[in-house]
Amino acid sequence: MRAVLLLWFLAFGLWIVLPVGALTAVIPPTHRPAAQPGLPWLSVSSGQLVDEQGRAVLLRGFNDDALIEPSLSPAPLDATDATIMQAAGFDVVRLPIVWSLLEPRRGQFDASYLDRVVAAVSMLNAHGLYVVLDMHFLGWSPEYGGSGAPAWATVQGIPDPHWGAMPSLTRLLSPAINVSTAYFWLTSDWQTEYLATWRWVAGAFRDDSGVAGYDLINEPHSFPLPPLRFDKDQLWPFYAQAIAAIGRVDPNHLFLLDNDMAGDLPTSVVPLRAPNVVYAPHVYTGSLIPPRFNGDARPLRVHVDELAREAAAVPAALWFGEFSIQLSQPRAKQWITAMLDVFDEHRAGWAWWQWRETHGWGIRSDDGRRLDTVTLRLLARPYLAAAPLGVSAGHGDGGAGHLQIVVAADHRPGTIEVGWPAYTLAAPSARSSCGATSVWDAATARIAISAHSAVADNRFSAMKKRGGRVRLFHRFLSQRREHLADVHGDAGERGHIAHRVRRRLALAHLLHQVEKVGDRIALERHHELLVVEAERVRGVDLHARVAVSGGDVLAHLALTLFLAEAVPGARLDERIHEEVAPAGR
Image (cartoon, rainbow, N blue to C red; front, side):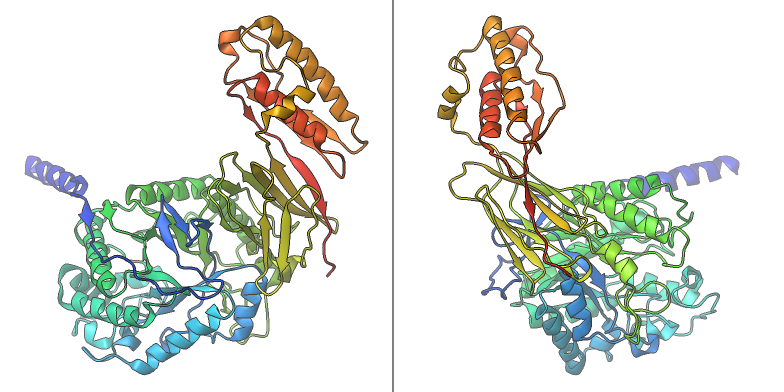
């Protein structure tokens, strides 16, 4: 008997981990009309969200559940909400919509509810906010006190004991909820109607660039089906089927796929070949998912890193559709900061759950009378809203108003757009003396940065606010080697150790001259220039950073050119800092 049980458990374990083949969803080519002003069509390219110019786009914003079932008493969503979000620099709202109100009777769609969705999308778009339409579920259906499926899509006659109120996780122990959930995943009966509903919605928004995409189903979970196997046999085949079905009506939008919400267990991702796929997991590690956050950010980083690997395995762009913590928790602000830092490290956008709510999770109260500006300031970090390939940023700081932007030598041309939270930081006004231009648009809370056309390779660095000053850092590297003769006559010679020694002496002299350009010039040498045998000089890292405030930059250009010629193949890191005065607030 013991041997039989052992064999049974071994067979079950092998079945759980048994891989399945990759999936494919075929849809027609996109056919997109002209985009709304300020809301270009979005696509996925090389694992990133991009706009029509090929710029990487970050979507940051909030969830707002104004359109879910009245039984859950959702707060309204109005133009004031959209105005604050836009003024704080955000650019997206994940808007839950519900199957129960779209198809209240089987085969009959409610046009009046869709009109409400259209009106909400139009209002948000008018304030420069993209919308992600999320088909929302919580406890399967309002029939069980939750949200999602209509009454006709529930299995009747199954007991529904209330061991906890929605949205308590104990409601997952309800037999009625679990039987109805399992029936949806194990049969095509309700899935057929569900996808017909999605096609009806997609038909209404097919030509609307203000809708970023469709979140196909909110927080799917395996319970009571076995985890991992559920992902392989039900969830990902459903995703492939849904993309194909909706894509036949609307191939123009993004398809957002949630992770399996079985706590922090990994989702068993099945590779899915389809266009414009976004992996949109939810993260409640240390918040709703125990153990509670204790100040150690490592578990958060481990889980988010895992989710990023899952996105790469699809492959898909990565965007975090929900994350949040009850703001009354002792370390809530520390959790938010740590989570945003991890998202920044993955260059991933996100949506906070939620915008308008009174029970400790929202930014604005449901009656609209209170606004949590402390939490809003934490979330409203300056960030790269859109940037050409080769432009990246570090952690934005919504308190001090700081963002460091790094531009690679081979970056693509195009305007860099920075989301600037004027609502919490005041509006900046920029000035530049090295050929770059920056324009502040208060209406969109954006700073548009453009490079001077005469500069061969432009680099922009950072924006920050210190004691009432905002600084815009510009980085550039000129490729015009003919200027090198002004620095050192024999710079073209290579391959002989004596010449490298002379260059090193000339370098020391040049650095001394650079230090004398002005009293406010600071020079930091990160690494010494090593004089070694000629065969091993290539590839040496040179980090000569020169910070210039209002001084002549010609010496810095000369230094850059000298280093570029002196050590072939060296990687250079040079910055020119310029000051930008703020507009008072």
